[in-house]
Structure formats: C-alpha cells, structure tokens
Image (tube, rainbow, N blue to C red):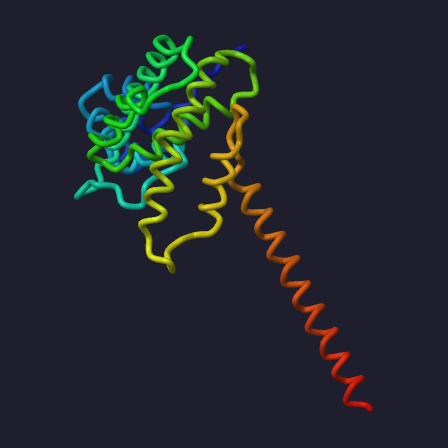
Length: 239
C-alpha cells in the first residue's frame, strides 16, 4: 500500500506579513483593536513597523476611541495625532497626580481656597494643544461616574475640582460667546452640574432630553391655546 504525500504545495512558502502594502498593514493595525501600549510594542519589532505604527491616522483612531471629548480647535498646525495622543495621555497623568496631592494634603479641611486648585489650573494654562478642558472634564467624569464605593475621598475632591475648575472654565467660555452662538443645553448642563451636591455627574443627554420634553410641552400648550382662541372667536363672530 503506497503512501501519498498529502502536503499542499503553495506557490510561495515565504509568506510574510511585511510583504503586504503599508496601507494594508496600517488598516490591519487600526482594525485589530490594539491599545496604545500594544502599538508601542509593535513599533519596537522592526523598522518598517515602527514607521507604519507612527501613522497619524492610527493614533487618531486610538485617540478618538479612548476619549470622546475634543476641542474643535486643536492648536496644531498639521495634525500629528501621535503627538496629540501623547500630550493628552501625559496631561491626564499629571491631572491625576495633582488630584492625589489635593486628596492627601487637604483631606482634613472643609474649606478650600482657590490656591488649592492652582496646580491644575496651571496645567490647563500651559496646555499648548487646546486639550486641557476636555481632558480634565472627561477624566473627572470617569472618576465620578464610577458606581463603586472605592476612593470616596478622591471622588469628593474630584467633584470640588470639577465645579471650581472645569465648570468654571466652561461657564467663562460660554458667556464670552455671542448671543447667537450660545447653546441653551450647554448652559443648562453647567448649571445643573454646579447645583448638584452629590458626588456624581449630570448626564448631559438626560438634560437635553428634559429640555426637548419641556419644549414639546410648551409647543403643545401654545397650539392648544391658539386653537381655543380660534374657537372662541368663531363663537363670538356667530352672534
């Protein structure tokens, strides 16, 4: 009984990932779901992957996936998303560090002066990419939205920073806009968040939905009043 060789012979047994076009490799890295640390490891494997891994479009995908809040006017002449990602990551770490210091230095004090928050304010002032406000807001939101009972003092001071620094900067920016540029919903979110004493964040979408609901109710009431007025006028004209 003869034994046949069942091994499949491919035309090219030297299939190599690096033989693919750079554009396809870039797409693979974007669609692979890698985190930033994974991408750094990929870039350390060889020179070709190092160049591909530094693509701005890859880092833009990672940045947009990790953070949802962005200033529409990023202060970068040519958008280099690797630099933007790195700057925001470092800024978030610095904010976290300063919040830890506030927690450690003022945990036994009820009243906090503006000097308490100065290091965080200075971080936002020294941000050259226009990332500061959005980075601070999204970082604090992630802490305050955590439903667990861990790090309650950190959440407490996070709420203080949220009100005294983040909401204050948003309100200041809002009142500097022209009347036709002011968005009612944004003002409502700021006021609602400011007046909320609990260590939590107002859900912006819920505020928008409530405003829409109120607007619909007012519109319906006005329509009903108008119809009622027309009916009365019809009756009076009949006499």
